[in-house]
Image (tube, rainbow over all chains, first blue to last red):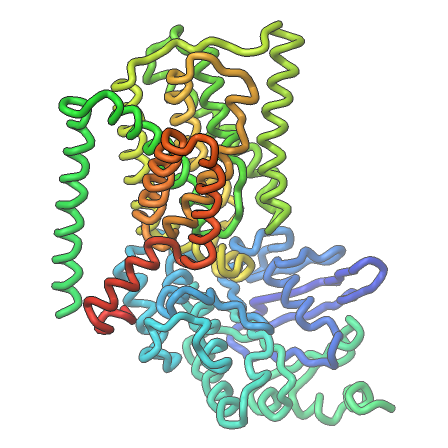
Length: 239
Length: 317
């Protein structure tokens, strides 16, 4: 079953096609990867899905419903959460408050503050951030800030989670932890669509990978298929 | 356990302090000379403008220079309908008119960020003053208007009532999930939107609520001045003072802007009466020093002292 589907999704900045006529889909329960060289349009595609940008032309469907043209907060309340390539935590708010906000304003409305705090506390435990709950977000390490973004996204109770370069800038140990985290999130029943540059991580964790180049989809398939695709190797290594 | 008993004890203490201050403020006109009510009215007026300003601009970081516009709309509402309707209704209409103006302006401009929003809101004050002047000269054929005068005790009680309502509203918003959402907008607006906060709706609503109180205060204050014209009503000074008072008092706590407004209003009155020629010079110097050395305002200073007295125990809570 397809949870997310894009038809002819395009976005032009002036005359430049950042994303051009891309058809894609994400199946329910899978971990889908999105790769491509710098400037391929990966983050732009995420921005289109999460409604930071509006596709023109093109349409995006979530669980069969056309969600093109909705506002970012409406997309979030439909059940699509995201993290950011350059972390965007609420710097001066405590770690706990960062996550509580997600509990308050995500999928479930009318939650009491006691419930929101309980839920956020549970998520911090899940992410291994319990000891830092009172710390302002800006004082965390990069790895922890990224975890906090994931916790905040999970607090909105998404069915689909968009992870934009979760592992960029992390050391090998942290990459291993992040990989393990992604699988644990899948076990919660959440579908994952992730952009990643760390190849070994994405190859080991994804069920299916989509490759973008110059805004166009050039390949799609299992990690094995992608790793052996001549077209993909050419794009990454040059002809 | 220690911390909870500590905070509940503290909230009991602060609760009784608030009650005592409230009783004193209500009974002031009964025993103090008339000047006390007049001075306190000036202070309350600035308290209302400052707390309203902080309600929106404090957490979101959107620097609004529109207080004079909303205050002025209240003043004009009072000048036009004062005497024709009962006074409480006049005050309510003054507030509602500002509320509606803020909804309109907010919906149009809250997508502007940073300096552009500040400049636009300042432009709004000028626009209001000049369009009203044009209207008065060419349509109604007047330059200014006389306002039905109220007794100074009446003015005082109205301002006190508005302040209490405002403080309660402000306190409840701060404690609610919307207070948290306003903060998140100030820190990282895009992330807030992607976390499910309807940022536009929230910003416009809070902007309008804060304008309501400024307008209501304007409607009351108009009756003190007997004569108004567009440039008296829409004086940019009323846009800048709330900002200065909020920064001086410190925005971290609700009482910060109150302290800031009270001290600076008193200082202004004091300097005008004692050193009329150099009052702006002294006032300006004090402000410059305060802003250079008190980054978190007086509240920051008080907290630093308290930490020194209590020890470092609660420094991180």
